[in-house]
Amino acid sequence: MDERAQSQEHELRALMTAGLDGDAIAYHRLLERLTGHLRAYYRNRFARIGHGLAEAEDLLQEVLIAVHTHRHTYDLLQPFTPWIHAIARYKFLDYLRRTKYSFKDMPIERAEELTADSDMAAIESGLDLHRLMSQISLKARKAIQYVKLEGLSERSGYAMRNIGVGRKGGRASRLEGVGVTGSQGERSVNTDRLIDALSANLERVSHGRLGKTLILAMVTGGAAAFALMLATVGPRPDLQSTAHLEWSAIKLLYALSVIGAGVPFLIRSMRPGSENGTHWPVILFPLVATIVVAFVMLVLGRLQPWREMLFGASTFSPARCLLCITFFSAIPLAVLIWALRKGAPIRLRICGAIAGIVAGGLGAAAYGLACMSDTIPFIAIWYGAAIAICAVVGAQVGPSLLRW
Image 1: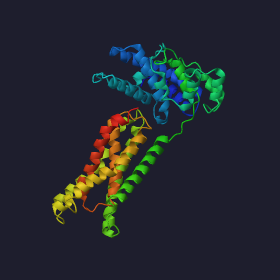
Image 2: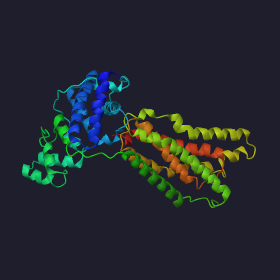
Image 3: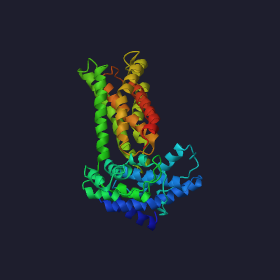
Image 4: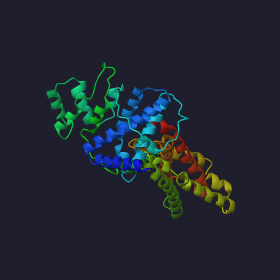
C-alpha cells in the first residue's frame, strides 16, 4: 500500500470509528468520501460492460445503504479499505448475477483500487425510493415518508417526528427534501440527500453484536436438536453404565471438536473482507483425524470384526445415524442461517457449507446420547457422512438464503 492509500485508509478508518460511536457529522463525511470513490469505481466497471451512468448510480446507492445497515460488521481492529471493497465488489457481482451478465472475465483487483479515484459528479438515480427505504432504519424511513411521500405539511410532519422518529424532533429536519421526483410509480433519489437521510438519527453501534447473535443461535439450535432427540428416538437405555457413558462422552467430544473448528471461521465469514481467512484444513481436521484413527484401528485392530466396527450394533445403525443426525441438524442450520443474515457474508456458498458443518456437529452431539454403536470407525464414517450431507445442504441453500 502506497503512502496515498495509507493516508486515505487512516482517514476513512477514523471517520468510520467515529461514526460507529454515534458521531453523525463524521459519519456523514465518511459517506460523502465513499460516494466519490464508489462512483468512480462503478462508473469505470459499468463502462467496461457497456452499461450507463444511471445504473452505476443505482448500485452506488445500494452500497451506501448496505454500508449503513451492515456497519456493525466492521471490525475496528482490521483495516477499513478491504471491508468496503468487499462490499462494493459483492454488490457489483450480485448485480451481474441479477442481470444475467457473465462475470467470469472480471479481473481480480486489489482493495486499494477502490480508493484510487474519486468522482463527485452526481446524477439523478432512477432507483425506486420505496425499495431503498425498506432497507434503512424505521426512524429515518418515517421522517422521509411523513414529510415527502405522504404529502404532510411541515406542522404535521413535525408532529409525526415527535412520535419517536428520533431522540430529538428537530434532528429529523435534516431529512427534509430527500429529492423525490417523477411519478408515483418511479420515485428518484438524489444521492447527496440519501446520505443526509442515512446519517440522520445515527445511533451508536454496539460491538460484539455478531458474536452474541451467533452464540444465541448455537445455543438455541443445540437445545432444539436435543429436544428433537428426546422427543423421537430418546437416549439409549443403558446410558448410565460406565462403559456406555464413556462412549457417549467420546461422541460428544467428537461433535464439539467439529463445532469448535467451524465456529471461528463462521464468525469471520460474517464480516466482509475477513472471509478470505477460511482455512479448510483446520475446519476439516476433526473429521479427517477421526478417519485416520479409524483406518489405523481397522488395519491393526483384531478385537472386533470389521463388519461390527464399520456398521455398528445392527443392520439399521448406519441408516439410523444418517437420518437422525441430518434431521436433528435441520433446526440448528435454520437458526444459523438466521444468525448469518445478521452479518454480511460475501462467499455465500462457503459460508453456508461451514454453517452446515457446525449444524451437523450440533445434530451429532444430540444423537450421540442415543447411538448404540460404540466404535471409532462407525463414528468416523457415518457421523462424518451425516455432517458432510449437512455441509452440502448448507452450500446449496447458502447462495439463495444468505443474499443481502
